[in-house]
Length: 364
Image 1 (tube, rainbow, N blue to C red):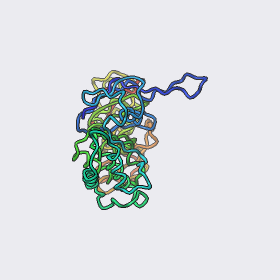
Image 2: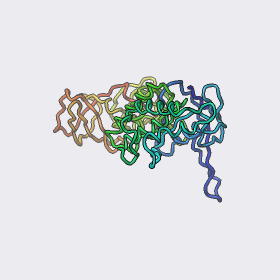
Image 3: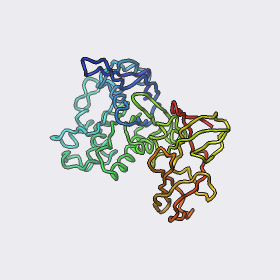
Image 4: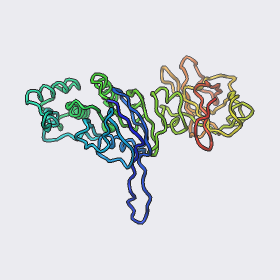
């Protein structure tokens, strides 16, 4: 099911009666979500990603704009008539019901032509339970399950109606690190097997990048960039996107372009012939440094962390906007761990320039 968001806007009124300061949670959002894809809505708290999800689900009414499922305008349609499956952050399972009863509950509320026989409902419930690998837990209650198992029950309950769209609101945030990794892989497997168009809301960029076909990066209700995860990482549209994506985060320096060369401090670190003379933010991905005894960029070494396959060099520079600089180099380079300084040359495709004024990307 293709989803089209057209000029979607949500404005919350001010809580202060003496003030008219409205809160624009989502501002003129335009996006087409292709049929059968998993889309990650990504951004920090307060960026509008959950509000967008709730408008798609029908739980919140847009202030402006339209929502289409396929060719159908569902903007004014009630939640129960949209054909959506919704999984919340807190699972929202019925504690007094067994796993089987929780999964069956949405089917038992179907009416009219959609009403199913008891046998058909049980068959469907066991089908989705097998899909999420909880078929042996059907007689347990939620309190007898682990967090990951409860999450699978919530997903099964959302899938049992065979929804046109599956909506996941930060579904992994209550799980520990190992379980998060396992469950996100399961979500991706389930989505591929069912082919249901899925929207996944998260503030965790690693989660979004690892399982999404496309990601949408948001900030203060405004869409910043849309694209395949690797494309957005490799070519951020602005400084916010560059900082938000990447672990370890991007290193940012104060720099300037002068005479076709990029300077960090007094060192000319790269040729940027097509860029006009100006002050810039210089973003360098951690993997964009090459240790070179003749390199132009000199940093003061704080620590060298040997991680087996890679070496993480922690250093400082007076023109760095970050407290520390973290560069990831191949362990085969055999860096001198006792050195007080390290010299680098830079990989041009891992270096990004941003306007000092607008923080928009400057291409070179």
